[in-house]
Length: 259
Image (cartoon, rainbow, N blue to C red):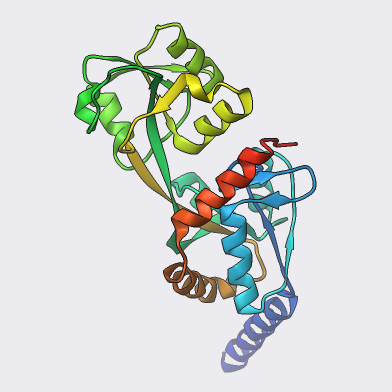
């Protein structure tokens, strides 16, 4: 029996050592259509979350490869299979946690806004101000920060197939406001040249947290705790609002996302 336990212990130790040897680099990817946090410019992935994650890996002296793998659904599939190690930023949910381990430290907040037609006189300071109005949202969108539950219980919100369609409904007066994650909606307006026709009300209606995800199949998963601690320290030295704004300005100068 003792010999059996000894063999098992040696096998476990050998497996752990092999995994450590195999951790020579991490493959990093990101959502290619989510500026300013991440986007693909036709040559490389760019964005605020990419900048932060690569800076942390450099501080850890952990080699990396930044890899574009295609649209976001393919990003998640690559993470599920272990073909990529790190996804720079995404929301946590139970389904994703089945194949990703998330940092304890949030990398950025992901705000959502109430968009109205330019010149609209809607007085907005809190969610309650939207009661009795006709709202729109994109089908399948989850906002976090308790907003999804509030919409279901208190607001009259109909869903549309996409951001473009919801802005068209807003333009036609079929809805009074459109709730959307702030930056994807703003990016649509910039790229379509219609930014002046709409306005985002302040304050944000929700601010959910986004995290860095590591594939559960990554041979470098043992360094996640070190990554999280380094990320936490790095963010204390960073003006994250400035990083996001700088990347938004960079994308605005060349608002193209190429698959």
